[in-house]
Image (cartoon, rainbow, N blue to C red; front, side, top):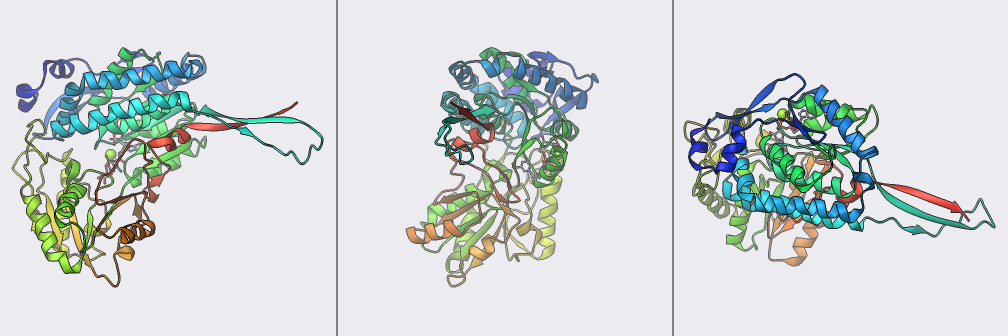
Length: 499
Ligand code: NAP
Ligand code: MG
C-alpha cells in the first residue's frame, strides 16, 4: 500500500481499496472465471494500490450474455422512458454525493490532481448523466409524408421509430477514466441499450466504484456490466458476435484493430482516437490570455488529452516573446503527487507512458530541437516529467507529427502572408484546434478552413455536454456528447402502413 494513500485518503476510499475488487456482471460482484487478479499502481510513487479481478474472454462472454438477457427479457428496454430518466439522474446525484471519494480514487489511480479530478472529472461525469437522463424522454421518430409512386391510389401512414441498438461494448482509456465512461454509459443507457464497460488496465478503480453507484441507483441486473482487464478483454468485446455496437476511446492504432474485430458481425463502431492538435496564435491576440490558454491547451491533464494543443503555431512577429512567456509560465507550474491539493501537474499514468514521453524528449533533442524549458524527468521517483516547450523544430520531426501524450509542446512560427492553415492541417489527425485573435473575421475564416472536429476560439478545451465531439481524418468515427451521441446509440426503423 502506498504511503501517500495511507496519510491523506478518506476512510471510504481506504475501505474500497482494502475490499475485494471484483467484476460486475449480471448485477453481482464476481471473481474472474480464471480466478486471476492484476495489480493497479499509484503513478506518484509506483507502489501497488490494489489487486483487481482480471477479466478475460470468458468473463466478457458472461457479461455479454447478461447484457443480452437484460436487453431482450429484462425490464430495461421495456421500461418507461421517464423511469430510465429518473434512474440515470440518480447516478448523477450519487456521483455528486460521493464526489470526494471518486475524486480521491481517480487521483490515486491516474495521478491527476485531486482538485481537478473532483471539480472536472467527477462533476462533469455527474453533469453528463443528468444531461442524458433528460434525453431519455425526448428520443423521437417522425411521421413521413410518403408519395408511394408504385402504389397509386393507395392510402398510407408512415412513421419512424428511434430504437436502442442492443448490447453495447464500451472501451475506455486511462486519461479520464470516469469521465470517458460517463460519455458512453449515459447516452447508451438513456437510449435503452445494455452495456459492458471495459476500463483501461492502468485505471480500473473508479469504474468498479461506479458499479456500486448503479446498484444504489436501482438498475436492473445485467443492464450495466463492468469488466476490468487488458487489451485481450477489449479485443474479445469488440470481436464478440453478440455485441451490437462498440464505442471506443483510445489510440488510433487500437482503433484500427477495433474496426477489424468488428467485421465479423458488422457491429456498429464509433471511435474517438488520437490527435496532434494545432493551437494558432495570431499577433493581434490578447497576449496574456493567449499565453494562459495555450499553456492549458497542451498541459491540461499532464498533456494526456486526445485534444491537447501540442503544435503551437505563433505568428512570427511575436514568436520569441510568446514562446518565452509560455515557457516561463510552464516553469512555474507546481509539480507533485495528485493527492497534494496544491499540485498542478501530476505524474504520467504509468512506466510505459513515462518511457514513451521521455523517449520523445530525447528524440526531439537529437533531431535538433531546443527546449526553452523542461526536457527532463522531474524528481527521482514516480512518473513525473517536466513541462517542456520545444522551439527550433521542423514540421517533419516526430515531436511535431506524433501524439506524445505528455506535457510537451512544439512551437513553430508562421508569417502573415502564408498563414497557419496549411501547416495546421498537415497531420493525419483532425480532432481539435485553437485560434487566438481579436479579429472576428479572421477567427471565423480560420475556423472554417481547419480540418478538425472541434475548434475553440480565444479559449482551449471549450467542451460542453451539449456540443458534439469527435474527429476528422484518423481522429475517429462518429461524435460523442450532445444530441449526436443519442443518434449513434439508436437506430431508425421505418414503418409504413397501407390503410
Ligand atoms: P489503447 O491501447 O488504445 O487503450 C485504450 C483502451 O483500449 C484500453 O481500455 C485498452 O485496454 C483497450 N485495448 C487495448 N488493446 C485493445 C484491442 N486490441 N482491442 C480492444 N481494446 C483494446 O491506449 P494506451 O495503450 O493506453 O495508450 C497508448 C497511446 O494511445 C497513448 O500514448 C496515447 O498516445 C494514445 N491514447 C489516446 C487516448 C485518447 O483519448 N484519444 C487515450 C489514451 C491513449 P488496456 O488498457 O488493457 O490496454
Ligand atoms: Mg494499452
